[in-house]
Image (cartoon, rainbow, N blue to C red; front, side, top):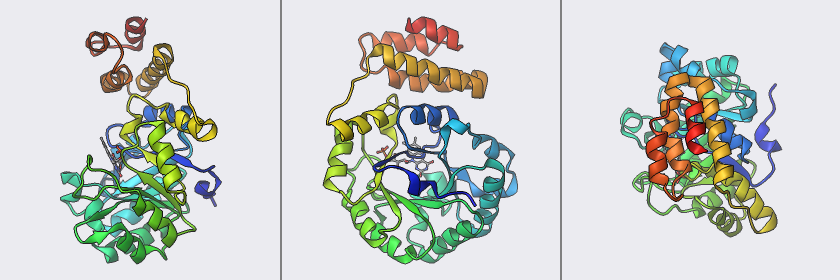
Length: 315
Ligand SMILES: Cc1cc2nc3c(=O)[nH]c(=O)nc-3n(C[C@H](O)[C@H](O)[C@H](O)COP(=O)(O)O)c2cc1C
């Protein structure tokens, strides 16, 4: 039986939060190399896995360096979750499965998945129980601070007896979207309700100081989930570890960032060829934001068609 890796991680646990279109194998690897303790996949549709799994299984491929690697599932049909959990466990072989209860995006929420499940505790219970009984991997969930009349506390109260082992709490409500101020007291309160499960707080963590302040102010939480804060700064994880251990952290200069960016480009090229070279563009723009002549550099970088060209431009 695979181990519950969550219990073996040193606290505070720093997780690369799931991001569709961003947390592919190359980015997960770069974040793991730069201090992330665990990396989540992009969300994967259980209905796609139920009806026509090939493309989604391709999306979920990973390299051993990404472990511990958690595959996130979204959907609304328990039968689809059951089959998806079986297929991913047997064929992808990640370290954990996660269920998306937080996504507000129209094409997910509008179909009754993601955050639309939070006000439906019976269905949410059935989904969590189904996934847990169709895998031997540890199961986690990702939720929001609330939606309409349902708070995350209500939600957790209604599912706390189920055998999921970890929860990432995005401290913004559904209504709060992606830019309101996150409320980290929610994660702290949730930890009181489920003290034996791992509780990670997520939302708006962009600097080592943000992380330190939250971890000090909310000492019960087990760690943090970082999403947009890692864009162009996968080393934020390492910096958070430094500030927590020593009260200070090293800044990354151009040479250090260039090395990471080239490694990222090499990995994307290996995984996705020319498509990878299109996808690296947004990452390169994030890596070099704020440097002198950054826009000039970006203009050159967006035309690069190979890792060699990127390397030349960055000289
Ligand atoms: C581009 C993008 C894609 C995302 N995709 C997912 C996803 O697939 N699954 C999920 O649970 N959350 C997803 N999220 C939400 C993030 O995991 C995170 O909860 C949210 O961005 C708040 O964290 P942040 O303020 O650190 O970015 C996504 C966010 C962004 C910006």
